[in-house]
Amino acid sequence: MLIDANAIRTDDFITVRLLGQLPTLCDEVVELGHYPANGTVSARIFLREGRKPGLENMHCIQGLGKIWSINRVIIDKYSNTVEIFINDYFVKKIRVIGLTTNALHNNH
View 1 (cartoon, one colour):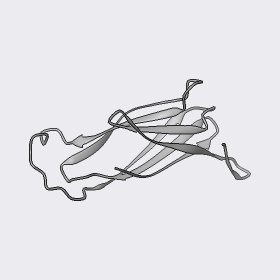
View 2 (cartoon, helix red, strand yellow; view 1 turned 120 degrees about the vertical axis):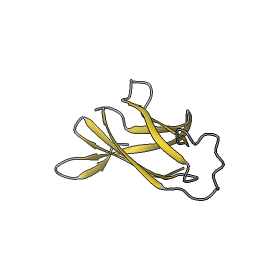
View 3 (cartoon, one colour; view 1 turned 180 degrees about the vertical axis):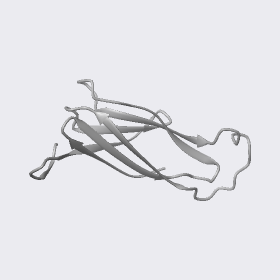
View 4 (cartoon, helix red, strand yellow; view 1 turned 30 degrees about the horizontal axis):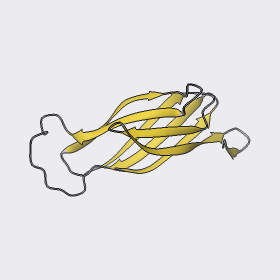
């Protein structure tokens, strides 16, 4: 489960920071890939959340699992948003905040 997400642009790079919590101690989250904008869609990051290898068929007590975080840099100088997908489902679209040497500004 995604809890928080932000994206900050510095020059031609977008740093995406994701924070979430697993549903059980038997689960994990893995980044499958990230892509810059292609002119028609936003920059995107794809995650898989599910059972750890070897624990797929085991019973695991439902309860809150570990907190996870992913920090990823995407080379992209044009996108104003980043779309986040978990298990091939669109979860959230976040704005890219521009960071310059003079000030912070919102690229929306």
